[in-house]
Image 1 (cartoon, helix red, strand yellow):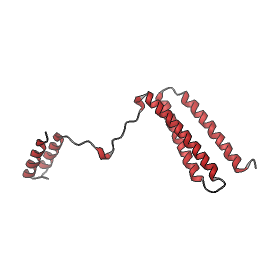
Image 2 (tube, rainbow, N blue to C red):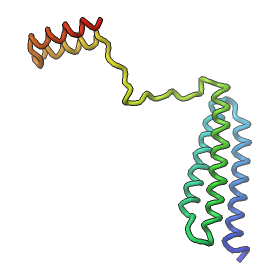
Image 3 (tube, helix red, strand yellow):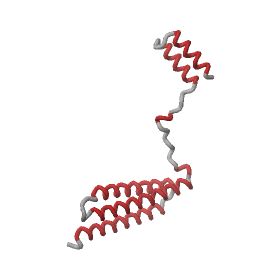
Image 4 (cartoon, rainbow, N blue to C red):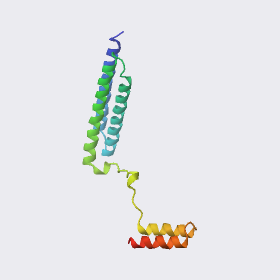
Length: 143
């Protein structure tokens, strides 16, 4: 057996380094910023998955420390790609993903929209004429 598990683990880390170098060369050859961004995000995600895989394997006194070192190295690589992504999106603002508005902070409907909704409820017979008129006056006072 050639070097046991430790030797194989070191060899696999060498392969990870080679694949990272290949990925970096592919990113450098990207024709557009969008293509480079996609490649960087894929590499970041790949390294985060590797870190999680190494952390889940980090059991026992013999393999645990090596797996934790590998997890930290993968996390460092993921952070490196995230910094590259941040730098690229700072240079190219059009690449930034649109922020999703949290559900808690939905836009309040306008008074006109509320009046239309109230009228629809009245027409459907859901609210009485008295309720409709009372709420309509309240909404008009907000203008």
